[in-house]
Image 1 (spheres, rainbow, N blue to C red):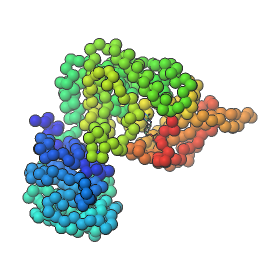
Image 2 (cartoon, rainbow, N blue to C red; image 1 turned 45 degrees about the horizontal axis):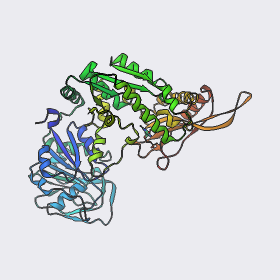
Image 3 (cartoon, helix red, strand yellow; image 1 turned 180 degrees about the vertical axis):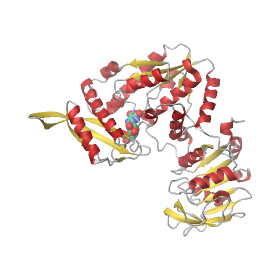
Image 4 (tube, rainbow, N blue to C red; image 1 turned 90 degrees about the horizontal axis):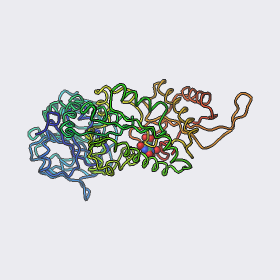
Amino acid sequence: MFDTLHQERVLILDFGSQTTQLIARRVRESHVYCEIHPFNMDAGKIEEFHPRGIILSGGPSSVHEEGAPLIDPRIFTLGIPIFGICYGMQLMAHLMGGAVEKAQMREYGPAAIEIDLPGDVFSDLEKTGQRVWMSHGDRILELPPGFVTMAHSDNSPAAAMGDSKRNLYGVQFHPEVAHTPCGKDVLENFLFRVCRCRPVWTMKSFVESEIDSVRKKVGDDQVICALSGGVDSSVVAVLLHKALGERLHCIFVNNGLLRKGEAETVQRVFRDHFEMNLIYIDASAEFLDRLRGVTDPERKRKIIGNLFIEVFEREAARISGARWLAQGTLYPDVIESVSFRGPSATIKTHHNVGGLPERMKFALIEPLRELFKDEVRLVGRELGLPERIIMRHPFPGPGLAIRLLGEITAENLEILREADAVIQEEIEACGWYEHVWQAFAVLLPVRSVGVMGDGRTYDQVVALRAVESVDAMTADWARLPYDVLARISNRIINEVKGVNRVVYDISSKPPSTIEWE
Ligand code: XMP
């Protein structure tokens, strides 16, 4: 009923843990397809999903709380192997007749477990001194009938439990986090020994299967894709081009707010190298015109977003027979809309240009909607995209407009672009590019005094912003080496006319934000 790629599927029920997505990524890294669904998915729906196994995530609740998230207890009778993590384990114990002790104190951090019953999820593991990461309040006092203790720690008499007859297992620690070194083995033991999954989820097979399904879906129609040069839209474009060739029309709008060399790179890569049907629109004069006199960042964003849609619609209307619009929606966006916790940790997608599909009455095609960002990068590699595009930092839709404080003029844009180019070059040259989330220049609307040669200058200030982050929700300023900072400052002041001072932004988010706007 499913293609080979999706046949070996695991279901993850989400009880609201911060690490639910991490569980899914670990399972996928082991080449098994999985999906995250809310904890209250009913047993009938679960049967229809045909999972080879079910993982119950952790979560912030206690089974003793009123309104604690519960599951349909019928799932324990479906004959599908189940693996409970932390809250998932406690819930399993609670619903199956064990006793869960209410927390006196949380146990948080590293712990060592002793394995009492090797085999099953603990196959091929050292029995003593396994380091694991704990993060729980309640703990299991009495196992449910049929279960045995599989591991213990100083604080948890039942750090793991199992019933090998029914293939039900639970662990008190978090195997999905990097602080649990044996975590990957435990999860893989569950996937491959208990659930007997085959590791067929690879990006090579994903590409093949997606090309096939896009062709079936689109038939002989034409497809339009808004290409920004970012990772997601680039991967969408190349994947669809592989499936559809000339029937894919990519539109790249130069809004005049791009980084140095960006428009040229996009044309070189997609038109010259991949030989794609690329429509390049230089709308920079139009954007600059609309932005004249505007200083408020939200107004800048609105003007840029709306004009982008206008320009895009105008160009799309010239492509006859186009019915489909390709979008780079990723799996985390899909989960956000259905998950237990509701909107959570992702980059502000609401900032990005919305409204295109609604207004244009296109049918949507979203080839990446099953993928996590790291998988998108692997697909990009599989498709031969240059490493520079695959690993590039996120760049905001409104571009340099929110890094140029005050009014946007062609002259100031040029200064910012040059200063930013120095930063990109130096951050790459010193090997920090992969360590930072973003590194860029901000042009401040102030002038300060300086001396150059014999003369006094009264020029502009550039702020360097470089942050480390995993999801842009929180960020810390990067501890760049002093000599890198010195080189960036020297080069900007010497090479960029109009700047006589460079400062380094040492604020974290929160309370600051990454962009200055
Ligand atoms: P802040 O400044 O809110 O930024 O800490 C978090 C992340 O979001 C990006 N960002 C944007 N991306 N359009 C975008 O496409 C925007 O208007 C926008 N504003 C911020 C920012 O670059 C950072 O990665």
